[in-house]
Length: 288
Image 1 (tube, rainbow, N blue to C red):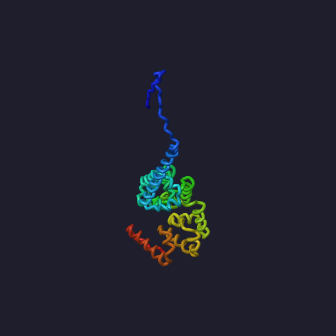
Image 2: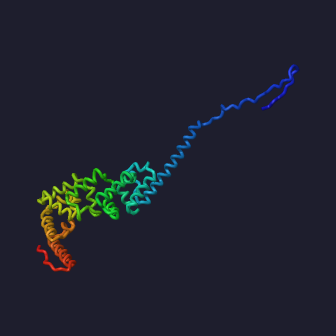
Image 3: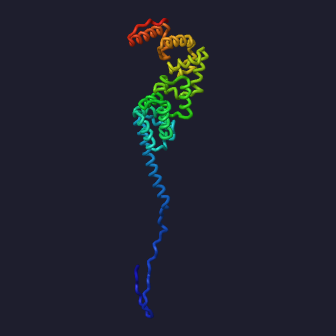
């Protein structure tokens, strides 16, 4: 501020001359809120892109197809990487090795956004404490049938286990890691139609039960594609099953069906001889 003194004949009071205020009409400032929003949006977009790329690289490290994952599980796009790692950590804690984990997640991409507490741990708890699968066998159960991880305990697994037990899968024939595949089968849509088809061939309920317990794969075969086209199914299965049961022997159903009568007879004799040799006793050959 400049102070100038002007002498006047009648007054000795100074007169003040202030500078003109600076005009801002020719300056243009963007609204502060708009500038901040633009910066925030740019940063957010950049961060989002980097995080998404990190998730894709994570999937690739597991040999999971990212395109398939996005196609079958769109929620993966917005799921944080920490959620994906929690799924890996959960499955690893039950013995699922990382290479196998990738195969499981690639088969069922919905697992990528599952919640371990509400989706995965209940399945393992069911296998351990209800199906009575030993802990070391849990990974075998999952790797033989990864679908079990996406099944509801209440709606699918528990009712099917109850049915299978009533059908005869108890004691020494109880469900194991070899037969957990049966747990993902619908009782009404899968198991009962197969049982009824076999009964329609003339087998009694008890016979069907014993056949299925000896060869659980029987309950996984398709009636339309595997059972019905075999016109000689009854002619083959019934007598062969009876001979095996009579001598206390077992043979996988697929092997029982694919061999000729002569090959089946030779296999039966060979199995009988092996058992006799193992016991160190002599016994007559089975009459065929």
